[in-house]
Image 1 (cartoon, rainbow, N blue to C red):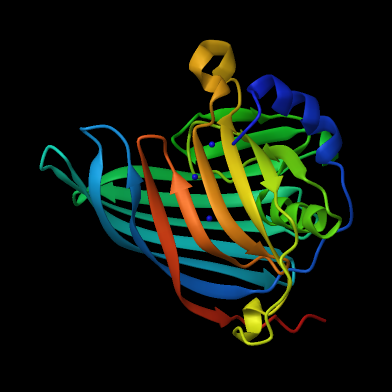
Image 2 (cartoon, rainbow, N blue to C red):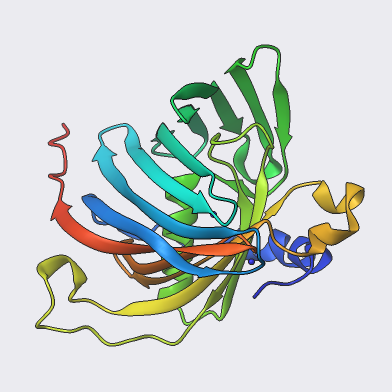
Length: 269
């Protein structure tokens, strides 16, 4: 599955309480395909054109949930240079939210760049650790209150349903060797459902802004009180997102929903 956000210190203050919320919300298993385009650019040497596709799949499993994201994009810079990037990420999270396996591979301009694989475990709200198979010998501590992707989405949806204006928690998905993040979410007012919409988007939704901060970065870099990036979207209370904008600071990328279809839930004994 990329800040209007508080400072890193404020994130730390909110973390201990917000991550402890509430029962798990039911999410809709689905496959979504988005077209990627340039939303806006800042600065003379930034990106001037974006064209690409992103496919996202979230599926329930008898022992947990699985999620995959395939991403390919071509970016043209003001200098005339073109960068083509392909990324494939796959993860599995246990039903209790305590275990995660993750696998990411990427290439840039046809050259392999990243191969990230590993497992992570949490000891309830006490934190845990991530152990990478690739790169070898890399291990990272996960702070208290950390959540894996499915649990994070369930807690966020529950916060939306309860009318909370802010939801903040630790987050880890293994998609980078930079380590765990704090994610602060500003939640807008409930938008009523539209009976004329497609079946998966007829329910209530909320405009949200998710700000992503790398854990520990503020200790090394004064500029780290600004988020690494922001994700703005309309999020439905079944976990489906559309009207997405990913803002990296010097440019922002829009993801337009092209295809949305349900995935059947498994039959479990």
